[in-house]
Length: 435
Ligand code: RAT
Ligand code: ZN
Image (cartoon, rainbow, N blue to C red; front, side, top):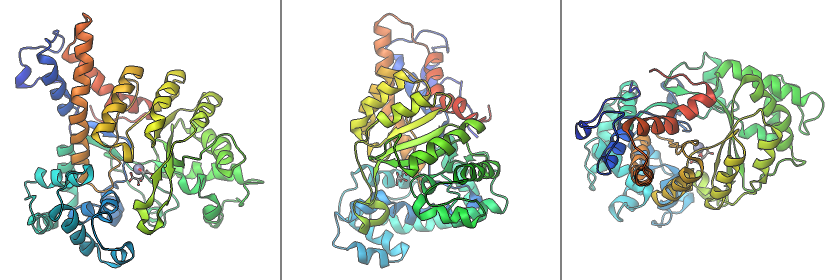
């Protein structure tokens, strides 16, 4: 496992950790610290090997990532109806052909696949798919996972665990998992906004709840959360919310959030992650790729941070238009931790803009990125891109500081990178990783 690095690179041998850097040394030291620091990936959709087939990896999964499916339908005559009838490898063939052979893979998501092929020394021309299939077939998942983490420069990934997903539930009910590099998160979408369709599942499991969340429902949801907290030991609880999210209001979502979930978070000392701004299924024909983004009213967040001062909120907003307000709110409320450039924001041009603003307004008191990877090898390109985008931004911050007359040292750079990509999260969740 990578540990927090302290060694100097050859390029910077002349500067000791606490020695002031020259303007010329700053870029290479920033780059070196970024590349040698193992990051914590605080939100992914990856699964530890204990979850078997739920954990996605390999070239066919990479090609059928929903980010690529959305692009595929723009560059192919194949209709969604026909596409969904194909087998996984036929879908991958179609996407490879449309986005990688007949067109140049210059979008962020397509370039990511190229970066992964390249990272494994696989050809990126038309012959790449066949060779990649042969390569991935030979890998054993345990060893491959370690290699991928190493290549991505991460040591811990945080999963997204849905207690109402039947396949996942089976794993948790049969002993769960105990893999220190895959940390669980209790994801509550089906409870918080999917209640009308899912409350009966809780009832079936023996919790006395009803559709309108009356009677003992709230205390029974808390009992459910306590049981799952015990079973899963999550680092935080989480939900994704639409651009229409309001708090407080008369909805079941508000009631369960305010009266059950947030009190349980306090009881167990867990932060609550709110991912705000998805517009679900604007085009259901393309399934997972059919969600969009919308500007939310972040006064809901203001109300939560102010009215629940004992709760801590990890927050990502999906709309670019919400980013400035999110920074402003983080300056008002120290129980708010902005994190990541989520989903449609995870493109260099937007990451750059958001991250610059966050540094200007919040210093290092935020978590710049998470990968949101659904397929194991995606962490390789997503974290490579994050480091590449971040290096000039941080360099610029230290150059400005230097020009004001402040000594910039490697120690400072290391402390700041550790804080943003490790300790902000460790301190909020109590996660302890190997030194
Ligand atoms: O980025 C994604 O893959 C989205 O589909 C969502 O999963 C989102 O990240 C979420 O966690 O809801
Ligand atoms: Zn996600």
